[in-house]
Image (cartoon, rainbow, N blue to C red; front, side):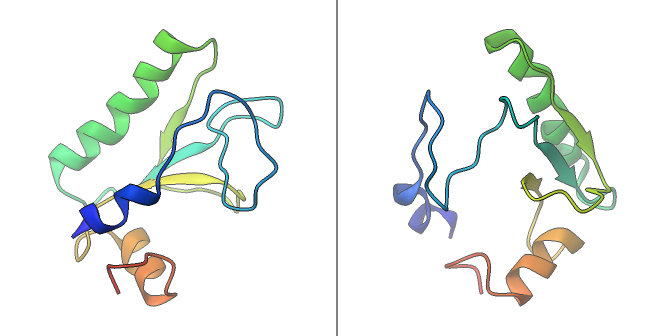
Length: 99
């Protein structure tokens, strides 16, 4: 199901001003990795391992949380039907191909 969305993804090594661009780390701060504490344990594990990997590649640290506190940019990790965050995005039409 997610494979249909994957071709539109691109990883860039430099900042961009494009509207659909998200900078994981940078001058504007770091994004949070958001997860639902009620999601599957393997999802919670992956969501917590990813922020641990980022400092190995860059000199920035990410944090995994279940409370994004109104931030503009976050990385949401979750399972459709299990994560309240994913369900909210789907209900709002924000996840193309999953609605």
